[in-house]
Amino acid sequence: MPHTSTVLIVDDEPISRDTLEALLISQNYHLMFAASGPQALAIAAKHPPDVVLLDVMMPGMTGFEVCRHLRRDPILREVPIIMVTALDDRDSRLQGLEAGADDFIAKPFDRAELRARVQTITQLNRYRHLLSERAKFEWVVEQAEDGYLILDAFGDIIYANAQAHIYLNIPLNEDMAAAEAFLDLAQKQYHCQPHTAWETWPTPSPLAAKTARYLVRPETKTATAFWLQVDLMEMTSRLDGAYLVQLRDITNSMITSNNLWTSNAMVSHKLKTPLALLTASLELLDTLVEGDLPLKKQSEIIAMARSRAIEIRDEIMRIFAYMEAPDMIKPGQGQCKLAKISDIIEAIQLNLHLQSVNLNYKNINTPETITLSLSQGAIELILWELLENARKFHPRQSPTLTINITHFADGLRVQIIDDGITLSPEQLTKIWLPYYQAERGFSGQVAGMGLGLSTVASILWRTGQTCHAYNRDDQSGLVIEFGLPLADNR
Image (cartoon, rainbow, N blue to C red; front, side, top):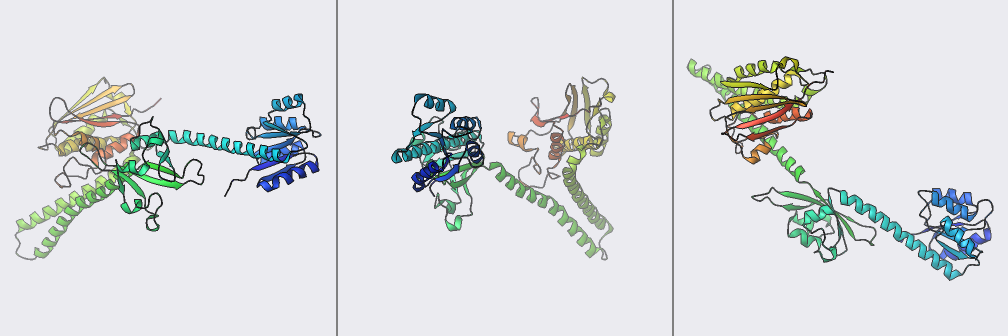
């Protein structure tokens, strides 16, 4: 539907208003009328026009005063104003220009001239408005994290923001007129998935109307897979282009979905195996308990069933610990004296049967005067998970551990150093993820569910602390380093 410009006619004489209406009614304008300056300002404020035909000589508020009021209004100050006057002297025109008028037309009206002036100025105003809106659009999309393109009806790129240049590997200084068509450019770098959704590009087929379009760069030896979701909107105005295209990086969400499926598989695997063995042990015991099964064999079956029951219990408790970790740092959950850490470590060492754990304080003379803003329960959980992890992944389950606690101005830094395995760069970046374990596949050989370090990270990250892992540079082994927040008891 063609755009209809709104013209506000301001004149105190009814015959002049009627004349202007008769001359413009056939030009498909939306006409509004005002018989005085105050009425014109009220109408313009409620319904901003595209152009104002303003009579100069009006009682009360003259056309010059109306013009000045419009130019002071932040919304109306750019509306074009054509002043209508019987005055043809130089001073009146200068006064009109000083008031902010854009053009003049003299009475009596020349029919062709009037129509030509109104048509020209409404078109210029429309293009000015479109350029202003385009400038705003370009500023917004240039700052956007998503890629945006404008395509013409043939699929050629008219405009691409900075992020789209990166996604499609287009040099920033390249002239878009020389660029390839969007689809040709995309297919050189990505796989278009699913194929059925791209067969009718850019128009979706009825069967694929609700199917998302993706550009997928497959995984390589040096890079993981990369996903872009492609959304397309047909533009109502064809002045700037036919289609607006959005390129959205959904790699993380796709990885999260895959990890969720993997996590569910890990939980299922870790619980099903001991549960099946527990059930089989109990069924065997139930079948043979009244037979001639030797007492020693019965004891072995009972011991195996008890062991599997404990294993299931421990796995479930790890899940609960991970889920409840955020509650440990809520206000009112308590604090912990630094001096208490030595007792906590001694108790964990005894329970885990660790042979060698050495605790060192650095820049700390009186641990009993330092208070942590984490509860004792949170500290116990953090240290238990880290020390158990060191034992679990040690080749002989008997690590030599050194724990260094250093006091800095902004808090404490803790290092837990073991003499176990060395991890790959990929493993070092993933060990804080839920259900991740530093083993190849779901072998089930490593006890636990991979929630220990993610539980630690969940607690520490929520207190604004950092935690990271790196290999020892002097020998095989791992260093876990993290911060502990100090209580503000001022």
